[in-house]
Length: 603
Image (cartoon, rainbow, N blue to C red; front, side, top):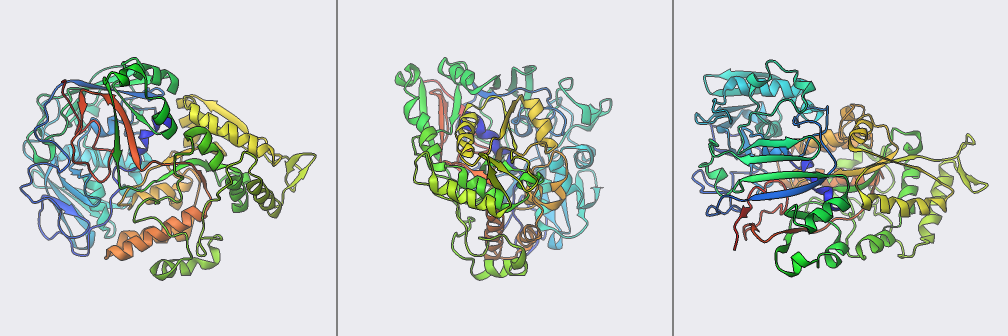
């Protein structure tokens, strides 16, 4: 959270919906969910890119934490999250102005079999890696097989549904699925393509800082210092610089990623001009702290970027694998005890709206009224097992804003009693006579998260609950969260306007016990599985949206996360020499925006 939360964008990449009822009948320059792509075959550039943008300059970003690997495609190690998107090219690329559309990148054309039984890509003959060697069919097949069997868990779910991958002539690859799935065609189009030969003498799963990736992307890693910075340089020989998809993008010569021990150090570096752009998620800080001399002189510009995307879910997740949080009534009690209005006033001056569901702030967000129509119809077969509020309507509590939060504490106490707990000598005690407690695991560097938890633990004390708060470095934090070794921790799950197969990775049963998966809450629910299945097989937009609305209800009423705030805008403070186009993508400040379509130009 705070100034270091943009890694949420990881969650959105590769999040696509399904192709409409009819399959792509012949090779095409792009594919879309419904009908044809918005841009014609001869489009000149993406609508939110400035084709006349100058090239040159540098942008310096700040990150809290460290890194010990340059390979973002494996489970082991900690990698700068940006490398996954800046240092690798895929067969197709997303237009962030269309939720459901891909255009050819490394691939010149794409063809999808009837009902999504297979997808076939044909490479551009000019596609090259950064060492000048051609991107070959062998590289593509090796990349897909290696990522699917040895890569990060995010790649495994889709690969488990692949029956075969075969070469088609000298420039084609056909991927056949074990059963028709129209979204898999789009997912496969977004897999990163690696140079197979680079890894012949290296263990792909053990990669650290000893292998600098050979890239087919516009940027290559130019320099780094372990844990301190990574510098990426625009490749002057980049093979795709004249593609319409790339016109007006990748304009900045150097992207430098600086790492800091905590948010305070990063803020001071920005104020001093050592980093040149900073995202601010705290509305109160934006209103009160950005009046330092470089802002007053005009050296730093304050930009607000609107967006039309869902809120996602950000807050504190409860691990339902833990005995403490297996009971939904206990989870609801923890939510009732969390005094959002008081915390929001303390942290944001009361300016930040609260997340109300996983897809809130968008057309995909659930209604908080009783379920009706197609949504109720979809949920009806699971009615007996759905948690209270799923069908009847559920909303997070609203306090009176006072610190005591008597109504919330009273409700939490009642729920704990229903779950079998009692307060004995001032201590919340279980039926076994043991005190009720749990471990809140936080990553070093987030002063905002720590401040929130400090307020929260004071509220829990009124219930006779004293949790243990453990703050650890990024490497330890990843080890523990990968192993689900926590009771509560901070949670970020960005979602897009086009949710699809990745929803299985977030809350699917197969991921509930898979180490390193994104299903941190440990949910396994047949209703969730079915709603995702309906989403992926819907042939109308109405049916698709109803399935997402129903999924949103099951997740929200599951009471797995104590949500915090979101912003309907992105706030970016940046050097005045950094510019962005007037035309904004519907996703706003998201992947594909900064630094992708920004440019450097001094007055």
